[in-house]
Length: 96
Image: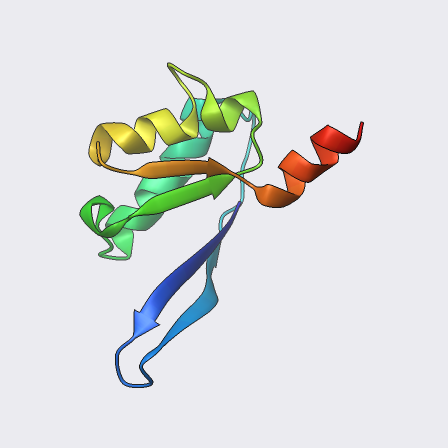
């Protein structure tokens, strides 16, 4: 999983976008399997779910599943989180 962040760089007074992490997966790719390494990374890197504003995914069921998807599990930690399906994937679906 690639995690990109967009944030306000106060010193430069501009928004920046950077690759924060690439997380490897072993085994299955169910929502709970995706959440574990993500949660471990957030905890170990002293990041906070409260500072997350939104998340964008590819729309796969493991990512956006209503009960067990990664986004749902993140929303348990931050109920105010906004979630989006990636614009590129939305456009690809409309063309088919």
